[in-house]
Image 1 (cartoon, helix red, strand yellow):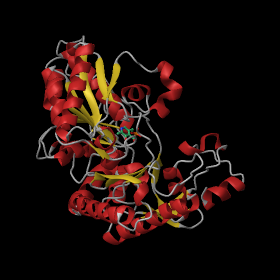
Image 2: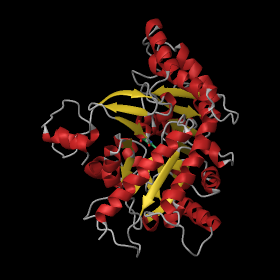
Image 3: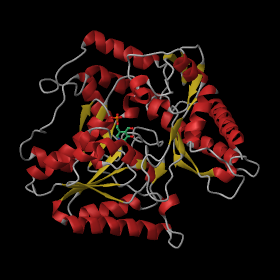
Image 4: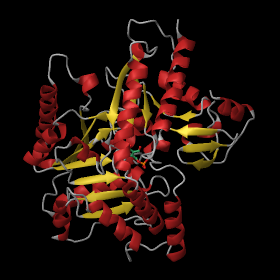
Length: 473
Ligand code: PLP
């Protein structure tokens, strides 16, 4: 437990604001209160400044100090705080939609703005279903997603994804009839030693095709995946050719490809859309984005629709039967426009690629180099852009580490916070045989500097080594 958490627990603090990890305030972990932020640093109630290496949950992608974004929110607040999107559009929403549909790949025709990632994925599910209703294929009702996936915390998105820990209390009310799962794309764990990457992709393609055939190909709405694995597989990119292979199956059966880029879209991988980072031109029919859109300055998510989807509905009812009260919220859209302007004017996609490569280089040297204490236990360092996963494995024959049932990543997360660094520890989010899922996630702001990357790595490696030394047998 960190010193801040210890003191909070010891002083018997009971808070009225329920934080995810402090359920009922009875757990030993009471998160410290954040009181301020500057750049990529967060100030805590005890005055400490901690380097946020994960941007909250891959959200705060330009840090906390953008005068441009703050000014844009204030100006919009003075001009017009709210209109109802069923009655009126608003200027920032129109501007933001233009930015998101303007990409050189020209993949999207229209955008609907909601309040976050789960709402965007709920919207994607409903939009896909309505599309087939309107084009005269109402028998389509099945979604195929992947094990080891996360698409949100609402009832439908929990059913769509496969994150056993988060599903567990709700299994009985999840829809098991219409949501189905195939294997994840996770080569490091699941590619067989006797197959090439190409053969692995072909095996996954066949599995998807078999699933279509088993369900009845003309009853499937689409295949849905995170473009790069996030909350379960920890920054796991798909193998080469994977999305091309999956899209071929969808096309063959007249179904849709739906990509969830809530965590990885809007610059995180060093490209506006994460699918662009694969360089194979495979674009989805529907896409969800959220976190990086407003960098945490306001809650917002978006459903991006291809021309095919829009034409299908335009040609019939012309009306997406969906809508939330806070859809296209002017303040959130104004914040998001300003964030996208900062990303563009400060060349942050390039910085994301450069600093991401530097971060990966340093981590490989310091965790896997010849003299690295952590080398025997560092199973994988993966990701792209400024999304990085570090997975540990303690089954190696090297010097034994006895964690006494505790998860290494969570111990490192606590130690790092004591050392003034915020990282994300994740454990067995969605266990499959052979996946222990003991990993750390790093997703710092796109404007992180070289010196900040070095500091991040220093503290992180120091924290990892501390926990190892404390638990060597
Ligand atoms: N989809 C993915 C891939 C995510 O990573 C997340 C959140 O982490 C969500 C959906 C849900 O987004 P939100 O927490 O904004 O509802």
